[in-house]
Amino acid sequence: MRRPSPWLAGTLLAVAFLFAFSALVVIPLVLHPNLSNAELRGVADAQTRITLQQAQAQLQNNVRSTLLQGFAGLVLVAGAVATWRQVQISRLGQITDRITRAVEQLASDNTHVRIGGLYALERVARDSSEDRQTITRILTAFIRNRSPWTLPPQSDHQHPTPALDDGMLRLGLRAEDVQMALYILGDRPRPGDERPLYLSFADLRIASLAGRDLRGLICQNANLAGAWLQRAQLNDAYLKGTDLRQARLEGARLVNAKLNFAHLKDADLHGADLRGADLTGVCLDGANLAGVDFDQRTRWPEGINPDQPYEPTRSG
Image 1 (tube, rainbow, N blue to C red):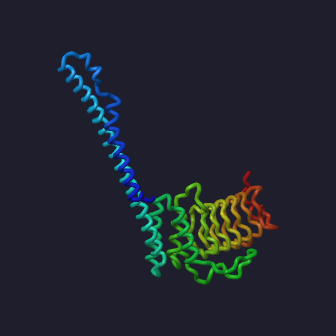
Image 2 (tube, helix red, strand yellow; image 1 turned 135 degrees about the vertical axis):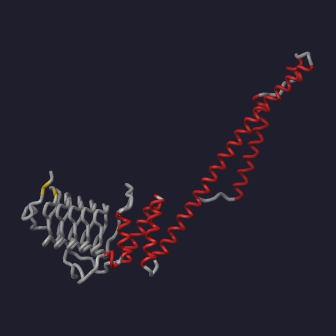
């Protein structure tokens, strides 16, 4: 919101003043014109003529009073609008400053300072709906930069590394700030036109995302081995080539999810909703598919018979 230049503001003020002055002079005369000599000539009594002229002048003054009251009201409205505009400009400036300070905190070497920056961004997102998508992009970039998965993309589900390193701690203990950013994203308000979260090439092993709203998540060639995703909303997620070994996906909703060539060895999919999901090329060795929900659109890996030995429930 740009402020008008002083020259433009001065010109507009002068024009408004001239208009108001002209209105005060002209409008009363138009509505109640002065009595002409011809009109007064028919009145014989001089005192009556004076009285008529005074009455006409009083009518003109009444119109001027009414106009002045109207102009005063307009000035009050204009002042209120100007004040509101100034408040909005000040608010936008404050929000920009808050985002700038929070982003500076994210670059700190101190974990607690970074977490403070994350909380500050979460508060800004609640206060300003216009900045929510920007903050979402900041948080996803923070996660990818703080916890990258640097191995090159895999052409199939074969990953050269163990699912989990020996004695690996869950994400919230080894990278508390990254886990906090995931919590914020998973609990964020969801506008209808929001862009999907982009977390591809991120190392999110043993992340805690149970019950979180991750619909439309783009997480290609990332590592979610051992992640807690019970009851997570993953409809329309794009998880191609993602490492999901030993992931906890009980009751997760994966309707229309793209899981091509993902690695789901030893993953727990008990009761997961796989209707319309694409599992072409997926490794399901040791995966628990008991009670999964699927339909005729679900695409299974070659050689997999979903009815044996787990006998999942088929939807219509």
